[in-house]
Length: 146
Image (tube, rainbow, N blue to C red):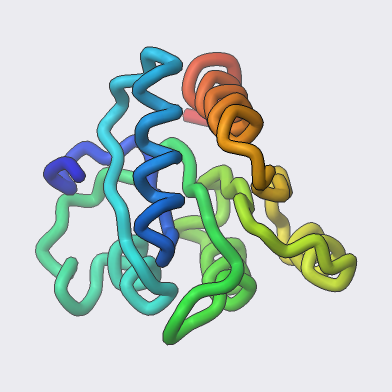
């Protein structure tokens, strides 16, 4: 994890193995962008809205949020709902990176404004490749509004 002053990627993931795989995949793709990891939905909301433990955090907005849906405290759909429902955070691209293949999760995520929905592949190499593609697209190719 890096210092939270200039975060490019906010990874919201409660599984330490998936955190490790995701950060390794981004590094393997030569994406040295600052990554900050939070392990539950409540912490993600505090980070994004600069409240609680993150009240003094500088107002730097992440370039992308990688969001798991199955999270403790506040689930990923509620994080997405709050993020896309607030003028301050609505424009942050959110990529759901989850093990859920449930059609209701996919539909609800898109209704709430998710930018992309990716089911985590079980196979390690496929997982790494998926994360590399996500990182390259959202950090290098995507042109956000200024």
